[in-house]
Image (cartoon, rainbow, N blue to C red; front, side, top):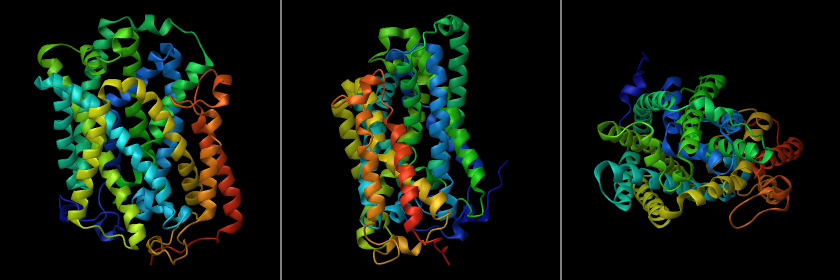
Length: 467
């Protein structure tokens, strides 16, 4: 059993810190909580639907599973590298962007990340609303509103409650998934599905892109939930705990989604939640599965709302030159953020599945370059050492605007455009690749290499640690 530290016993249930530095005396938590948080965040319905898209959009079962696993490993490594920054810096993820973009300039990628959070929160609310509607016999819209109220309430508490919810979600998720997989294997001929193997580079790369994009999307806030760990926590341990949790959880969900979509065929569209629950049973057991679906979404939707608050607070604090945010301000931010995502969910609930594929691929265009720049700077340029005090000082060593980081970021976005495939725009290289969006690969490699070459020649050796 994990031993509870004195600092954790003293820390209040309602978080008092926001985006400011976490002193060593207030550090608490364990690597096990990192594993359970990200396992629980991925054992949920939106991840299932993401995996199902590999089949819905033309892939076969066998190669879709292989492609999804490869994407999980690639994207999971990126996410885990971001997570390892949390204990060392003691700050939310996006604050560190001020090193690469400047205290004011960091607002550029952060605004785009906020839009991403709103989109993910809205899509999660749609699926959760369907589950609540089935569970208590109300309309989907009423289910969305009930779900949003729960998210707003939990987000108010902050870090400790979010990790507690993650632990409960991981337990319920494991139980529900074991049950569903057992029913799936005993009632259906899975071997027959796996025998259908028609390899196609386009559908295979689509599966890789779907899972990689799912993982990388956690990058902008993953360190928010590891920043309370003691600073002496080994980076490789944080990397392993988060990486295992997010990869195992997402792959389990997506495997279930692939099988569900293959078995349901055309009936999957528009009936995603009912199809998944229908794999298990009816009656009381179905009600329990609907409850599990809702609780699984609670974890990641709370992460999204909390991460949105962190991003908004980071933008505002950058122009105020201070990191402190009052409890009242946090409450207001959370309510506005949840209200915005709920409005999007209510307006877009009837076109969810078609829109979702384009959304999760297009959003990577804007923050895979950020991820590449942030990781290269942290691990290879500044060697895991930042001047914490300068992060809130526009007159300090990082300045207001870092033209190097901003320029490389802009190039990273533009260089992806030939490879982007969305509902509104398709780049010239997409047709050559069989209709597959691989912009995320270009968006990681090109700006990462470019930033390393330019920054190595212009950035001072090693920034001092916080005194």
